[in-house]
Length: 323
Image (cartoon, rainbow, N blue to C red; front, side, top):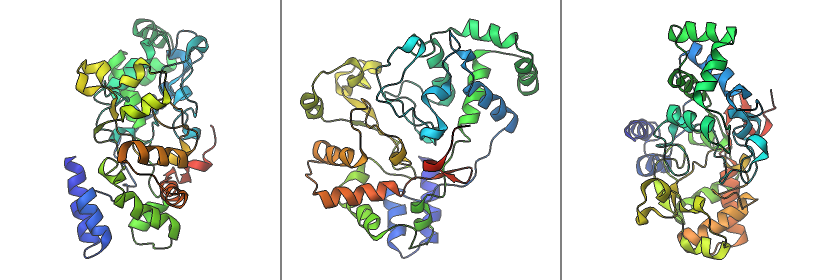
């Protein structure tokens, strides 16, 4: 949050005297940075590991299986499918910009990307492998041995593998969305309806949780129990942060998702039960804010959210093709 404060201060100077300056100062809403400092050798190794099904027990599942860069950094399914066709309990969040989540996973059980990368390998419903076997497989691969030798002096450990994956994931930034261009001064970058949606987004209170440069990812928030009662069939995954802390106060509490690129990550919510973005907007307004949005209001907010779709390597995420 300290970096957000610094960036907001810079934005306030750039937009001095404007409504955008107020938004930068009050909500931390500023354009995303266009570059990131990384270790390129680590990131190259991490990319190979991220895309390699060798990490799974049967050679069928990679990190990219659930976090497909051509599908908004998700798999665009309600819940992810792991080894043996097993269904996981929860929707996969996007990997784009994930470095800027204050914790990882919906329930915040990992503090950073490297911690997050360790988990799926040994999850029986995801990769179903164990790290001892993975390390043995990597040691039997001459290309990996050479790469780990270059980056880590030859040591192939689960910590080094996770560190490399995390370094690659740090490269997955998505600047230059239409909204970023608007924030930088191009008043024609978003439509009049999207601009109206942005004002509604603030006026209705959405920004109280979805704030900062990434419009979320910086706090926990309880989801209304009424949502679960009305939906029915409450599962363990619905308990969210409670599954980590065992504190009743944390029941139904989740990390607030970022809204950057939200238009390309359907279906929505941790349960993947909502198929369209406009439906998600209306549901969140009803259960979290006590607001019954009109169709016009919901459409406007949706159009604003669509303007948050950024670019990866200069290509808009809704046009990224599979490698």
